Image (tube, rainbow, N blue to C red; front, side, top):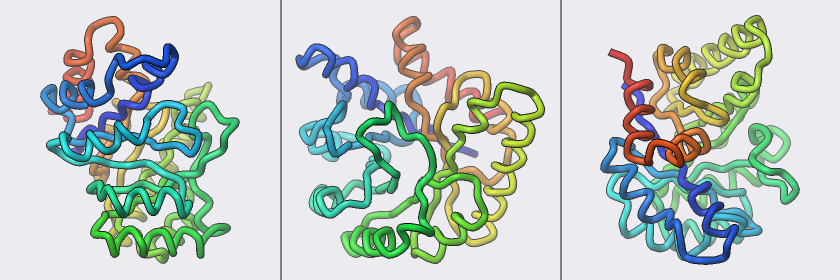
Length: 239
């Protein structure tokens, strides 16, 4: 049965808009866990546009489920992760000009950098996942890097504008999940998922965790975070 990893980056985005102290992503994480999230995801970016080092430090001490740190494979971030030791790190591509992560990590083109980061994080006792497109070559490269898990980038599926395109992208994700499972990787999925497009994905077998942030936080502004998390948990655990 798939788990929900709640991304609280956008709680921090709202806080940073005013430069104050609220809303606090630490409080949001606690509410999310109480509502059924089985992991908390944050992305500590190089430019610190939302999550701050302070958030990571406190969340490491307070998260009761699993803390998943999304990060670029840079010396700075690897050093921070090895010191703080979240349960999991997910290596993602990062560009300063992007609004949000735009695609999967090109593991093939950056293999040596990625593998070095994977090895350093694992030596610190951290599980490593790589955020990749549903591309067989990238998934095989992720496996070769030594990472224990992959997170399949679901952005193209989420942004598909026709039924045919959605079916095509869903099939690619299904094949990617099957390949990841075959290689012995733990498979996660995320990016652009909401309360509608999650339903077909939740029916796929082999996905251990969905990492979802924006749609839950957006819904929480209208119905409250507890309810928003509970509603998503119900959708990813179909009876």
